[in-house]
Length: 345
Image (cartoon, rainbow, N blue to C red; front, top):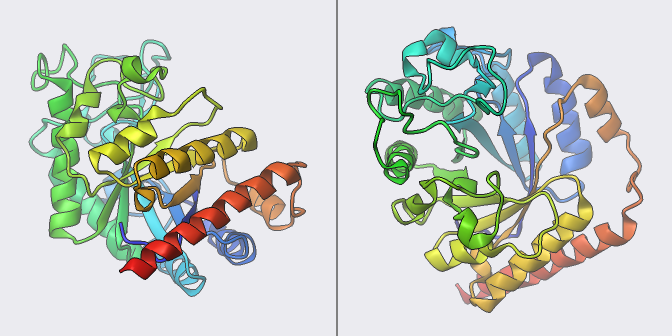
């Protein structure tokens, strides 16, 4: 990943034609003025697909995507569409629009549709089904073309349904190899065939036992070994939303040769700590260019009122002035590092 300036990214879920204007206003009046230069737009299946209308699960159109992309470009923001792959194919036992249209892709069709956690967190598609990639790649292509994107985020976080004992294709297979194959299949299409940069979440590549993470921030049943099976030019977004004693995965990704972007949520003290520690680990390895910035995620339901509240909010509505200043100071430090790296080239 070559960056001319530090990555200051923002993530939101979006898939509504009716909210395109509020989103564009948010970009112009909030994100751009606050220095956001990357927008991770998680649209998943909330897009009106023309190649496969049967999987459409929202109202966002190709024209909407073009308008959003134009606003981002005019404001110096790199727009990266996010499409959840492998896992997160619904919530609980309820399938999303892909598995409703193609139930044969379901890794766990035996699980009841009304199943809840802890019986199931969310469904996955089967990475070994011979027809799944063709469908998914065509959906990816449509999103890339609609947003005129030069990068694509494949999700891949919190995958728990893989190599299920009841799956005739995956039963008994190595989870790391299955996960790695899925990543490599996507890489081959996105990077090799389409020429776009590939991003993904990093949690399934973390060894929970070794790193002291829980089963959400790390892997407990074998997928983490895929870290050595996938290309190193995939950009890893590594989320930690609580303040922890340490974040060893940041240094591990850097040591393995990946570029890693730490991801925070709404807890500012945790975000500041994560950014500080990530910067320190990069400096310790003399690899500051491998940790080029940070992304703030948002997981709330964006409605018209949500956009209006953000667009009209006070500068620091939650009273985090001191912590936000510290976060800005850290960003300024990264600015200096990045400029030095740029001058070496």
